[in-house]
Image (cartoon, rainbow, N blue to C red; front, side, top):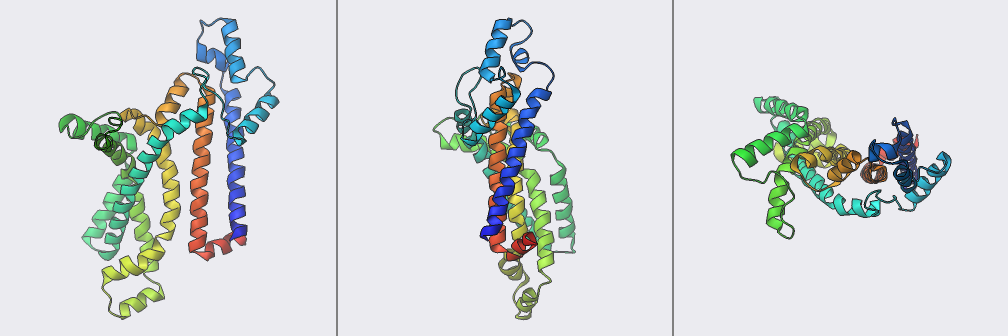
Length: 316
């Protein structure tokens, strides 16, 4: 297990370094001078040069890369060009809102997706199974930002049940929960279909195992066989999907937070891109990549702990 963990952590570190190189190279691939793009055509040469110094673009390329790697690996993601605040402080200010949104969206999707997948297995081959299959594929096909727009129209504009924008009143838990419902619904609805199809496929594979036949031979009800015995093993592939799903949901939150006007990583990176604030953009992307790799690596280690066959395959 220790050998497997070391290999997985080393692989995540290599991926992180590759992302850092690719991200830093994009600064030089973008046409034009970053300082000129940020300040506009009317800026004086002196002001452009001052901004280039703040961004560290006045140094040789290799020195810039070295400083970027050294600072990033020590936790220093640079400073905001305009406010001069540390980028990491801004990320830690906005990230909890995005994380709460992502966990809430994935949480209700997991509960409903697993329930639909189990129901499809219990009533497999029936009209209910077919209807759940059509529903799952339909939910997968709908983009999150489309759901967000229609959710605002129906529940905020027409029915006026929930707020359309914002994150609620600070200090008012009830207001914050109400403001969280629509974004979490729009962000998680697509994953209900993914989870339902995966759980159904995993359960059908497990249902052919010998211990399931033994449980049926003892006369246990089909629902008890599915939920108590088969689901424990069938849920293992879902753990890997949940890790990928959380990372995907956090990246999709950029669009949802923009539509609902919620303060979060999406709002931070969108504003930084509009202002050509490269340190904030690069620091935010790097932070989110590191967080995503941490979640995926932790899920891989958990799966290897639950299923030793994964470690055996990796060892080969």
